[in-house]
Length: 386
Ligand SMILES: *Cc1c(COP(=O)(O)O)cnc(C)c1O
Image (tube, rainbow, N blue to C red; front, side, top):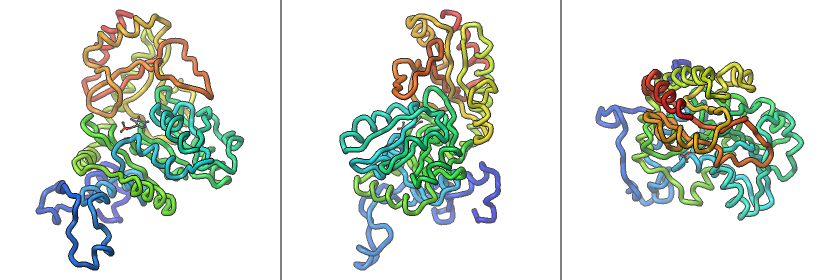
């Protein structure tokens, strides 16, 4: 698609960028080349060609990067074999021994685990902060700060960060910033447009969309920072398998359409739950009573299918009974696939900078693409047992 079409609708751009049917025998989708070795045209090319080995990616990877750059308004993209790696690689690449990384207290659990284990082992240090800190983040920045990490909304508890305030401070103090943008999937939130240096995506979730592959992406407009990430990726020998690249690229073509349905269904279920007598609260930033609703309105253009539900105080046995009697909601981690999922969160609410108290057991629902009335009926029959 030509640059003159860059103001076309998102679905149009996602369907028409990163495609070259004429170069692939007319096939709509790119070929999946399985390759380690690439045969060079000449001896000069062995040490001179742009691409000399499969580890650097192939045609399908190039097309996927084009599509993801279009999605996030980015110039540069590094693909990773999981969303977790998209989060940990920038920390690895930017934080040397003695360096510090500022991490929101509600960060995705495995990112926290990386910080507490591997980052620590390599001499770096994570400093956890209240996700609602805003411009007060200034007080935590030192001459050792190498990265301010954000995640908005935060995993499990759905706080929205004041990205603009944090970016303003970070730019004044010359510290790079990154946002884990997996919840909004690059569709409803564009951190790079707000001045964040890296947007990180678990494309495993909404881009993949069918719970059948793992992948991630690190997007930026900063050539120098991109070079650091690429260097780390090359040093470690990281790559994304071509089949998984192809699956994500296919998912991106329909992502906006799927997201709109996830959004509408999730809001319908969330509003219904908020009025339910067994429910104490619903943690969904698009609902007007959410404490960060105005920040969400300011910086997001929509919401995905994932939100939190707080039950009125009840025993752990009741929570397990609720989950065990769900029929349509699968019990499983992750989100973004077509099927609805549920988990209880309390066993993994690991916080050190804040002490959130929701006044009851916290659950997380991922609303899939089933009919909303069926999902409500499933929740109702299980809630009736609590
Ligand atoms: C799922 C998720 C990840 C990790 O993605 P994987 O592909 O499962 O490794 C990272 N961040 C957030 C917020 C996620 O929800």
